[in-house]
Every structure is written in C-alpha cells, then in structure tokens.
Picture 1 (cartoon, rainbow, N blue to C red):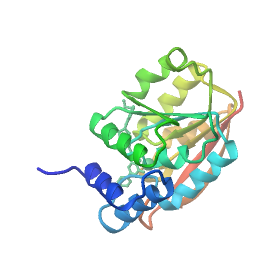
Picture 2: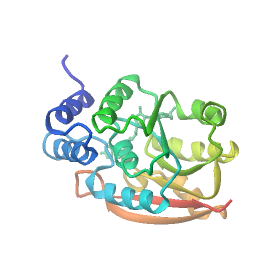
Picture 3: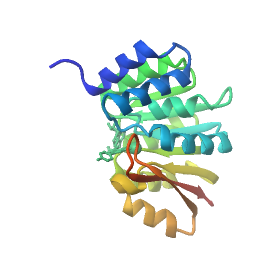
Picture 4: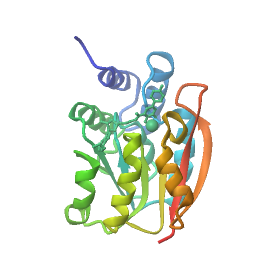
Length: 214
Ligand SMILES: CCCNc1ncnc2c1ncn2[C@@H]1O[C@H](/C=C/CNC(=O)c2cc(-c3ccc(F)cc3)cc(O)c2O)[C@@H](O)[C@H]1O
Ligand SMILES: [Mg+2]
C-alpha cells in the first residue's frame, strides 16, 4: 500500500532540507503539511510560542510526551544549550523510526534521547535509567486524555521541582478539558494561555503554560 504519511513527510525532509540544518527541516515539514498533506505537528503558528517558552526556560533537562514525527523535538532541541538533554517518548515504533531519521537529518541526535514506549511506563523509570532528578521543561503533545494522568505521575515520581514549566499543545482543539481544569485551579500551578491557531489551519487552538510552584 505504499508509504505512510509520516514516511512521505520524511521523504520531503530528505529531499528539501539541508542535513544538519534544523531550520530547513522545520521549514520543509511546514511547507509539506501546509501545501501537500496536513499532519499533527505543532506547526508554524504555535511553533514560535513553543520556541519562546523553551528559550526563556533554557532547560538543562526537557521531556516531550508524544514524539510523532519529531517536528517539535527538532524545534526544542535546536534551542538547547550545550550539555542539555531532551528525552522524547513515542510508543508507535513506525512513528519512532521516522522521528529518529528526521532528528538525525537535523543533526540533533546527540541532544535527543528518543525512548520507544508508553509515557506511563517510562516516567517511573526515568530517575534510575537517566539519572535525572527533575525536568525543567515538559512539552505535552500525546493523547489528550493522558495529559492529566501523566503530570500527576510526574508529580508523584518527584520529577517536577519549583519552577518546572509544563507546556501543553491542543488545549482548545482537540481540547484537554480535565487537564486545563486541573492546572488552572490547582494551587500548585500558575497557568497562562497562549492563543494561536490549529496547525496549518484558521481554527483556534492554543498552548497552556503551567509553572509548578512546588
Ligand atoms: C499510553 C498512551 C499515552 N502514552 C503515550 N506515550 C508515548 N507516546 C504516545 C502516548 N500516547 C500517544 N502517543 C504518541 O503521541 C502521538 C499522538 C498525538 C496525539 N495528538 C493528537 O491527537 C492531535 C490531534 C490534532 C487534531 C486537531 C484537529 C483535527 F481535526 C484532527 C487532529 C492536532 C494535534 O496537534 C494533535 O497533537 C502519536 O505519535 C502517538 O503514537
Ligand atoms: Mg498537538
């Protein structure tokens, strides 16, 4: 049945982006998804908001839940300071295989650890497996009904510290109502909504930034 959508996206990157140039990888994916076929990357409307939060936090340790094809992985990793690490988790092996190649095309494989598996299984093992005591930054972009259970798991595993920043995609579309209610009403978080657009469309969507207060 031919190539999958992620595989077609990878081919577009390999054809149109310069190896070792993250910006050209980002541009090639955005062009492909805007003009050829839509895909659920954070995209070029919300992307600059992601960039500004990552730059502001300048995380030494970062976690991404839901790699998909690695678009936001590249956006985040390209901004990390030397010695900083991004762990990204993806449980679909086919998507993980595409993401590895896209991350490598951008030349960012040394800043990124892609873990194949479910976030719920990985999070409790992060301290022992990676020697990480806490995350400065977490980007949530996986199944929308898993945002809330996973941040509760991060809390319970002691992986958040005072000042840790969570940034959640799609809080309007498709929407993450339980997550939003929690982070906006919990005394343990200070939340802020960044209005934007659903990737490659005119529909409203946005990112929710939540600072853990300890
Ligand atoms: C065990 C399940 C929870 N843990 C998990 N651990 C690791 N990876 C997980 C994962 N859940 C899902 N994933 C992976 O994340 C990705 C899933 C992302 C889900 N995202 C969306 O549904 C989404 C959907 C839209 C969307 C919006 C409007 C529309 F009309 C159609 C789609 C837009 C987005 O920006 C989205 O992010 C996949 O690669 C999946 O394999
Ligand atoms: Mg998303």
